[in-house]
Length: 173
Image (cartoon, rainbow, N blue to C red; front, side, top):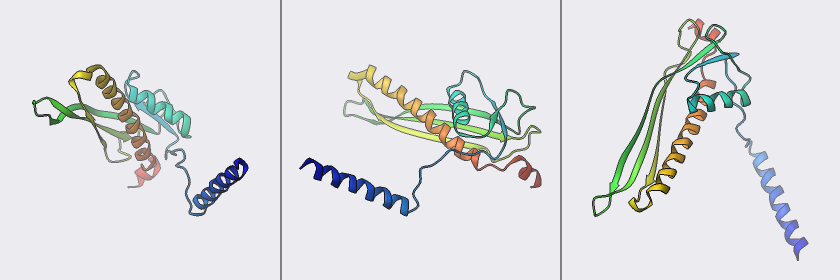
């Protein structure tokens, strides 16, 4: 009975793979940047900066440089706002659900200060239930959500940067 079951599941897996390959599905690959070098003008202690640099080193052919002069493009963060807002209350008037809001804006420029893209504003939200009797666990959950939002922000930023005009094309405009 077992060989027949494993053969059926193997055949099902093969059929699924062939169907996905036939329809043109493919995993999203590495984001290629339209510039050969990048300077990230952000604090070295920033989690966003650290995650962004790690992703660029791992996935892109773009070289990270240590100064503005050696860079074909410069990425800078213009502002960052983290907010925590009550969404709903229970019958006793206590918070039952909160919303975490994260907003930031990035500029991508060439070394002369010319914009390579429009300002990239990223706005993320996460809703989370809240319970006064579980303050420690809800605080930890909230911290995990903030970290998840930062990872999501880095992925969105990489996708937007990959669509920016290369420095030579930006000069022609």
